[in-house]
Length: 227
Image: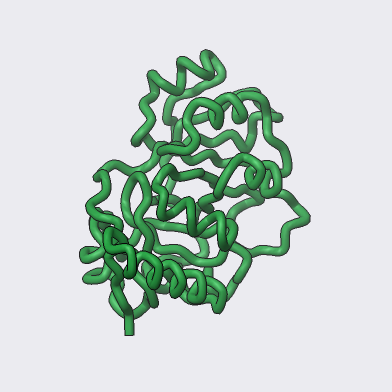
C-alpha cells in the first residue's frame, strides 16, 4: 500500500527518503517534489521500472520520460556529445527549469522507450529531489499524473491520481504550476541550431540571451515530455 511522508517533519523525511531509496533500488516507483511540478520517478537503468512508470501514467513507449540528473558530470556521462551552446545553457539555467534533449550515449545499457537515440536531461533545484538523485543516480521522471490530467502540484494530488501504482510519496509542499521549458539540441552538430519544443519556466527571451541566433522558435509539437 502506498505511503505518503511529510518531508517538513524530520522523522518523516528520514523515513521517506530511506524507503524511497529502497523502492528505487528494487524497481518500484516514487513520487517526488521538483522545482516545477511533482514527478513520478523510476530507476533510469531499469527497463522494468521504466515500463511500470509508463503503465502508471497510461502512456506508451512512444512517449519516453525525461531523466533528472544530480549535476553536470552526469550530463557528460549520459550524452554522446555536449556542444558548447548546451554547456552555456547548463551554466545559465541548471539547476532549474530547463530540459535539454541531447544525443544519448550509444554505449549505455538502458531502455527509456522510443527515444530515437536521444535523451532529455534536467537538473532540478528542489533539495529533496537533488538529495535522492545524488544517492541513487539518474531517475526517469515524468509528471505525477495520469496522461490527460493536470500535473500534480501537491503530493496528495499525485496520490489521488496514481494511487498504489507508486510505493512512496514524498511530500515537499506545494510546487509551482509551471512545467520545465524543453529545448532540442540533439541535431546541433548537423544543423547548428537549438529548437524550443515547449515553453515553460525559462522564457524564450532568457534562452535567446544565452544562445542568440542559434535558438529557433517552436516549429513542431512534442508529445514525449510533460514533466
